[in-house]
Length: 481
Image 1: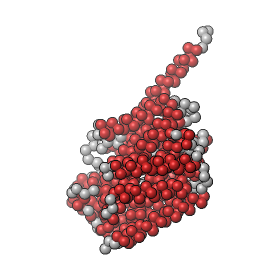
Image 2: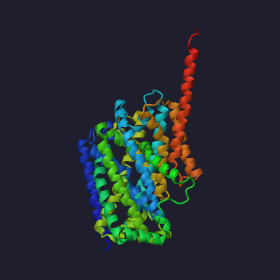
Image 3: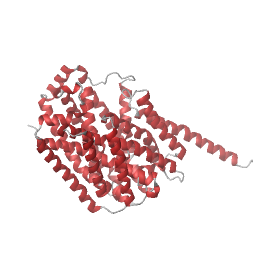
Image 4: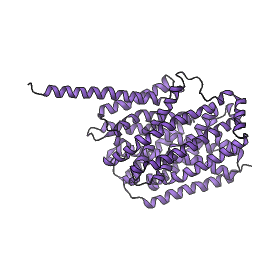
C-alpha cells in the first residue's frame, strides 16, 4: 500500500545525497569563471560520459517520451532511433574538434566559439546569447515542469511548488561548484535514473504478462499501437526518419550538452565518453518505451481526459510501496535537475560572457547571472500551459536550427562572416517556427530538418556571393597591365 510519508522520506534522502555530492565538489573549485563554466577543462571521460547522458536524457525521457509512447504506441521508438543515430555521429565528427579548437582559441562559451576569431563578432555573440537564453531557458522551464508533474501526481502538490523546489535545488548546485558540481551530481543522478527506470520497467512488464502478454493486450486495445510505422505521414516514412536523425545531429545546437565536450581533459579520450554515453542511451530509452507501452495497458483511464505525461508517477503509486516510490521520484528529479542546472549555467554563461561582456571574467558576476537566468526560467515555467513535450521539443529544434549549422561550420574550419552567421541563425529559427506553427508539418517531418537545411543553404548562397564579390574587388584594384 502506498505510504506518502515513506515516499517523502525516501525522496528527501536521495535529494540529500545529491546535495552532499554537489557540496563536496565545491572543495575542488577555484573562484574563476573558467572553473565555474568549464571546470578548468579537466574532467575525466567517465564522469563526462555519465554527465552527458544525464543531461541529454532528462525529465523528457521520464515524462514526455513515456507520455508520447502511451499515445502512439511502438512507433514512438523511431524518434529515439533516429535521434540516437544522429547524436552518435556528432561524437565522431564534431565533439573532438570542438574540444581542441575551443581550447586553442580560449573560448569559454559556445557563443564565443560561434563568434570565431573575427573582431566584428559582437552581433554573433549577442544573437547567439539571446537565442540561448530564450530557447534554452524555455527548455529548462520544461524540465522544472516535468519535476513538478511528478510531485503533483505523487503528493498532490500544486504545480507551482514543484517548479519552485526544482529552481531552488538548481541554484544550490550551481552556486556550490558551478559546472563541476553539475557534472559530479549528474554522475550520481545517472545511476539513480537507470535504477528507477529499470525497476519500473521490470515490475510493469511482469504485470502485463511479459512481452507476449503486453503485445496481445496492446493489439486488443488498438492494433495501431503495435504498428511500427507512424500513421498519417504526409511525406512518407523515409523522410520522417531522416528528420529525426537530423534532430539527433541537432545536439550540436544545444549549449548545455556541447559544453560537455569542452570540459573533458583530453580530446583523445572522447571515445570512452562516447561509448559510455551511447550504451546508456540505448538501454535507458528502450526501457522508457517499454514503460510507456505498459502504461497504456495498466492505466487505460488516462485516455479519457487524463494526462499521459503523468503515467510514470501514477504507475509508481499503483505498483510500489512508498519507499520505492521515493526512489522513482528521485529518478525523475535526477533527470530534471541534471538537465536544468546545465541549461541554466549555459544561459548564465551566455548572459555574462557573451551578451554583457562587461560582466565577463568576474566570478561573482557570473553567479549573479545565474540568479537572473533562474528567475527568467522560473517565470516561464510558472506561466506555461503544462505541456512539457511541446515546450521541450520546439526549444530543441530552435536551438538546433539556430546554432547547429554555424557550430558545424566553425569546427570544420569553414569561413563564415559575421553578417552571414547572423543571417544563418535567424533564417534557421524562422524556418523551424514556420514549419511547426504556421505549416504544422512537424508531425510528418520534424522541423529541425528544414531549419538546419535552410541555415546551411543561407551560408552556401551568401558566403559564396561574398567571396565572389571579394574576388571582383581585388581584380578591379589591380593596375592595368
